[in-house]
Image (cartoon, rainbow, N blue to C red; front, side):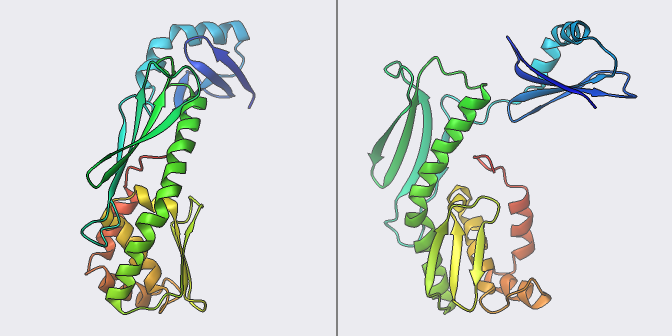
Amino acid sequence: MATLSFDHPLLGPVTIVERRGSQKLSARWTKGQLRVNVPAGLTRSQISAAIDRHISDFEAIRPAPRYHDGLVIDIPGANATETDPTFAIAIMTDPRIDSKPLVTTSTEGNHLRFNLLVSPKTDFRDPAVQERLDHTVKLAGRNLAPRIIIPRARLIASRLGLRVDKWETAHGTSVLGTCYPRQRRIRLSYLNVFLTPELRDYIIYHELAHLTEPGHTPAFHALCDRYCGGRERELIRKLHSYPWPVNR
């Protein structure tokens, strides 16, 4: 299976994959880049002509960019006290910005908003632009995590009468929480700030249950379900189908 990559003036980076036995062209977008499967044996000029003929078809299936002008990501607060602040991260174009994005903050009452200002010339379809915006949004999430996740986790543990000697925020993205029962230490990924409050709480309940039941045994799930008010399965389904506002 041969592959070929090139930059198309309208489609951007394109990867061509030659498939033996295939009789027709097929395509999909992955992380902002187009991948096209073509029958084996075509010349480069034939491939280029086929790509140009199908530009409108490729554009029709191009996913909308995750990050775009006017996007607002709401981040609920810790909900540990009545005065806990809420947050938001907004992306907007600003004619004063030439190249390097600028982050500003604005406050309204108990609401803090991070404004990511970018140039009006920004091509939001560019995968490199999406990657940079994703990094910046996640960096804001990392900074907010200790103010949101840890206070909520401490409140829940206190309500359940459980002792946790050390709470930590982690920078990992594949694992949302880790419990070390012998040390009575729990690490929670900063990505939890991008979850809804009920799913954040589920992650906390899950890790707290591991203090008593280290493995994912029936006893563990029974305990976690009790902590969740009988909603463990429902919350697991919601977590699996959750539309993350950032890349994960």
